[in-house]
Length: 382
Image (cartoon, rainbow, N blue to C red; front, side):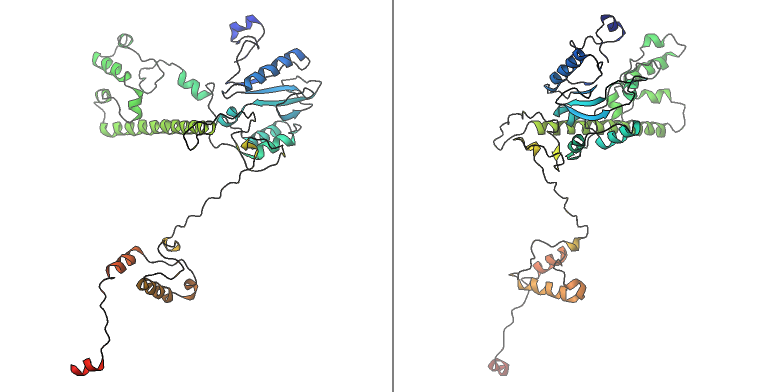
């Protein structure tokens, strides 16, 4: 989509004038004439208005380097043909205008962008401050949103006329009036019409229409073919469900970053921080910026992942510690087990009894006989 000041261009798809279009919630590229200061001022004003929106909004501007602004300069282009044979007399700068919602919702792969930019032109210079701002933050792991202009989305939106359309939810099914114009038998026309009315959500669950058995009545191994169809539709539906679940979870994670609750279940006021990296964790201080009141400017330590002991004998049970236990019979058995090992293993303090040994000791606890010392009188008496 594009804008134009001429009203006649609206017949060719133009959205209208730059002042009449709302750029909030959009990803926009603007390249005003470098010599027209009025157009440059209009573009900067529209970019400032887009940042005030709570919708994920960003604008990529190509402006002369001598223009004052408060946005992020991601590259400086000098002596580089920008569009075809166009060579600007003054050096140009690639400026990124982005709010914190857009930075989190559609993350930027900074290392990949730098590699592609240097591959396009080795003369492109990246400011050190911008490079430090991106390297000191942890980008979200979820991918950016897919545009409706990509090839996959456009192919799904195309309403292609076909005999079978139950597997394409966006297609208009062929009705019986259209099928009656063909030379097909009446029972096949009825089966195809009912087949195309089958809901796509049922197919995603592996429930295929029963009309397939009528149409494939003379095919060998009919049950195996229908079972193959069920697995194909179910696995395809599972991929769609998995992708949708991932997008929904990432959305609610972003909502939790915006709307946090206290212990009394009261909503905290939304942060008024205008920093584009507000929702990204800061793990280093490469940019050396001034610290503000917002917690997003403070460095947070990344917690290390605890080690997982795969073998059970390396884990020490809770009931046994280095101190002397009050149960002497358990201490005696554990000392015997440790003594029976070699010197290499006896120095280790993480030896433990198995669950079967502990149960066996608990059962034999009350079966021990009391030992009484006999006197000489009792001995001679017998």
